[in-house]
Length: 115
Ligand SMILES: [Zn+2]
Image (cartoon, rainbow, N blue to C red):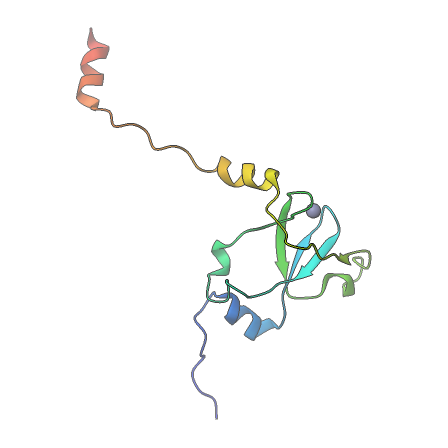
């Protein structure tokens, strides 16, 4: 007997239930790590980004262990103890944000231009 799908859609938990284990890959460094769901299991995978702690490049998550894929045998499982976000990744993430503009009264702005 089949019950209803127990997982919230678009969560990492639902993704793992569908595809099995996930890996995060840096194609620049040719390295990968198995994705731990600790702290992200219920998060929407469409809103989570990954970056490489060694080079700062954007990371992708994949459903097949990378070094078992044809042409990717050189990829290596490369653990980093206590990985931290690379400064280049922080700059890239912050570049998309902008400071809120200070309040401006547009009527005064228009009057100023007429003078
Ligand atoms: Zn990298």
